[in-house]
Image 1: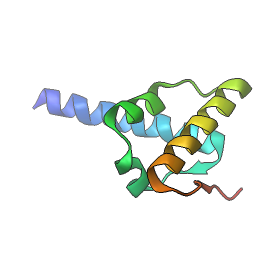
Image 2 (image 1 turned 90 degrees about the vertical axis):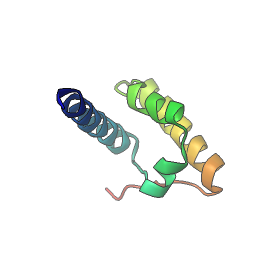
Image 3 (image 1 turned 180 degrees about the vertical axis):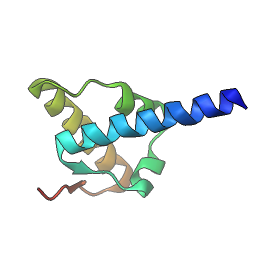
Image 4 (image 1 turned 135 degrees about the vertical axis):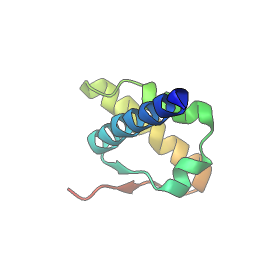
Length: 80
């Protein structure tokens, strides 16, 4: 039971981390798009740094390419 709680907490932290990165790069990632990514791609998006301007540019480019490859369309941009 304790292990399941730990996994749940770790998952919530990953979601918060990912959300912040998506806000920084200005891309809206829909659940259907997320589900099309492999577990390795999902983990990379959670773990990849996205703080400095070059990291943000690299993250945006990678995420855009992943969404385009999986869905055939450009990602939706966040309205600011």
